Length: 210
Image (cartoon, rainbow, N blue to C red; front, side, top):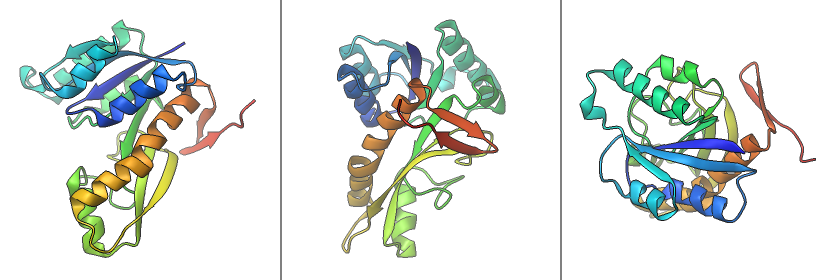
C-alpha cells in the first residue's frame, strides 16, 4: 500500500477524482492517508472528511516564511509515512527543501500542455486567458513531477483538449478539467503506486503493465 498525501488550497475538484478512483479500486494499490490544506475551512477538507480521510489544516499565515512553512509540511507528511505527495490545487509556494525531501515523489497537474503556458504567473484562469489570447487551437493538461523549477519537472502524462470558437477562459477551464485533468491525475497516481514510473535524465518512462 502506497500512502498518498494530497495538498490542497480550495474546493478540491481534482481531489474528488482521486477519492472516487480510490473508492473504485483504481489507484493502483495507493491510499490517500491525509489531506492537508494551506487555508482553513476550504471545501476540499470536507471532501476528505466525508471519505473518512484525515483532514489537516496547516495555514500558511501562521508561519513566518516559506522555509518554516515547507518544513512544517515535510514534518507532517513524513510523520504519516507519506510516499507520494499530490499537489491538488495547492496554490502555496514551497521551498526547494520541500522538493528535495520527496524527490520524484511530488506530483502536480497543470492546465496546459507543458512546457507551453507554464511557470511563474501561469495558474488558474490566467493559463486559459493566455491560451485564448494566443489563438491556440489545442490546449490540454499535464501531470508532472515537481522539481525546483516552477512547472519544470519531468512530464508523466499529457492529454490534448480542443479550443473552440466562442470559448471564454471559464468555459475552457471547465473543459480542460473534465476532459483532461480529471482523467490524467488518477491515472498518473495509479501508475506511480503500481511502481511503473521511473525517471532517467529528466524523462519519465512508463513500464508496461505486467
